[in-house]
Image 1 (cartoon, helix red, strand yellow):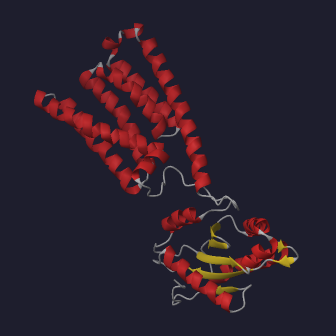
Image 2 (cartoon, rainbow, N blue to C red; image 1 turned 135 degrees about the vertical axis):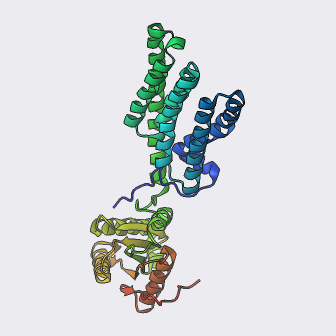
Image 3 (cartoon, rainbow, N blue to C red; image 1 turned 180 degrees about the vertical axis):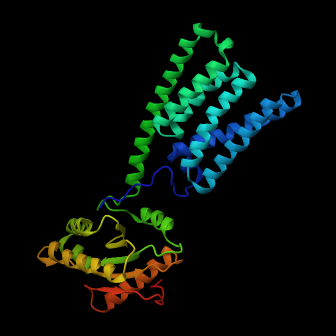
Length: 345
């Protein structure tokens, strides 16, 4: 099972510098908010002093909407909706500038078309870009020079759009690869602790059960490293991850917590069904994974998520059940109880 990477629309709460470097959509939304605060807001005041109420209203509305979208994106780290809001505002703002200031709209089209490809999917960016160019040309026809200037205006905007598409797609692919690598365990290829924290934080704590968490620990793994070497130990970890990934359902998630410890997030259902999945995993690992001639086994603790419970509390109960399995002789699965105390410190 290959866990999905976290998309740019669901970025974890990183330091602001890291967030700007790792999410280009958030960076462009931030740029839009900065432009609104430092450029449009002062212009709204200036337009009001001049008595140009239409232009003032346009600048004021854009300031509030763009600034609000940027604030929302930073508070939630969700960029999909703010990106669409800002993209529509870019086009609406260009049209409004064309109504109130005519020729000024021609200059705003170029950065606007470029920004669109960083805010919304390519097809939507092309559609909105064509709308922006058509509106600016129609509303600033005299300043454009009519049919004489139209071909140059269209061609330069097409080139701007092509540049925006190329750069945004490269950025999207590179960031996607980086996110995938940063969320996968390099040895086993399954999700790492960071991915577990992100996905569980999004799903646990609600009014419904999010499923079950299981903590798995390979039995006597230190002995495997000591007697067979770390290369064999690494191969055992890879084989265990591969066997479990092949057995698990598509709705289940597998993470490597660290060392010889794994965490399973099993889909919502009956506790007996989750226990049956774990038991099947235990048998398959014992049958298929070897350290030399010795079968590899694991112990596991399983906790069913209680509605309203945090993922950390659920994981702690699973960890406590794991230590009961260890004390009971290993190579077994123990079920947690809601009243289980937290594990060792």
